[in-house]
Image 1 (tube, rainbow, N blue to C red):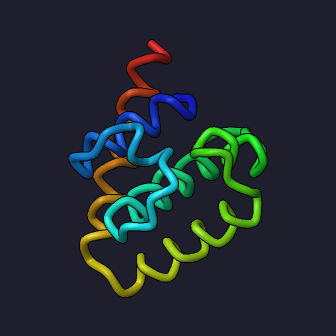
Image 2 (tube, rainbow, N blue to C red):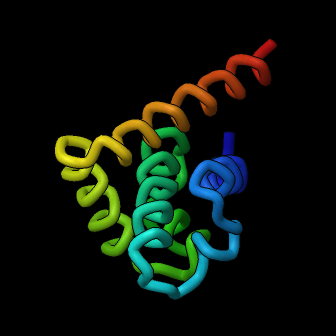
Length: 101
């Protein structure tokens, strides 16, 4: 699963458009979804921080690091984010398994 697949699945999960995740908007619902997508992209692909940032709207690698750290914090305090991550990880694992067969 590449960046496009992760982005698409994350946007769908949060009822957003792919363009919303790549936009410059700082609305909380976009930022959280974008950070979840960047966190998944970092952990499930071999793309560099620079490549991930470029994909998600031309962001700097430090923005990707900050977003990933923020999601790590929210996993401990926000049940909605935790559930979203678990659901998306399961869906992505299922797609990887299906692609491998």
